[in-house]
Image (cartoon, one colour):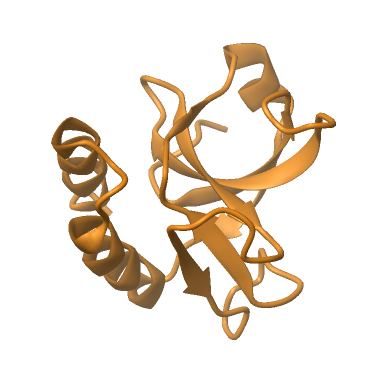
Length: 118
C-alpha cells in the first residue's frame, strides 16, 4: 500500500537518541519527508494533537515543528500505517506551520503545498 500525505506511520527513527519506533506524519511521500510526533512536549516549537477522533494516537501528543525528518525507503516500507490525520488536524497543522518561525520559508512552502493536497 502506497503511503499518502497525512498518513501516520510507526517507523524506526534512527534520528532519536537512542533510536526507537516513533509515530510520524507523512508530508511528502516522494521525498520521504515526515513530521515527528512525540508523547511529550519535548522540542519546541510544537503543535498539540488531540487523541479524540485520532485512532493513531494513544493519548494527546505533540507534532515537532522544527524540522522535517527523512526516512529511508526501506524504513517506510517496513513501517506500520496507523491511520490518517483528520481534516481538523490538517487545518490546525496548516495554521501552526504558517506561524512557525523555526521552519525555513522553503520548508513551510513544501509542507503547505503538500497538505493542500489532503
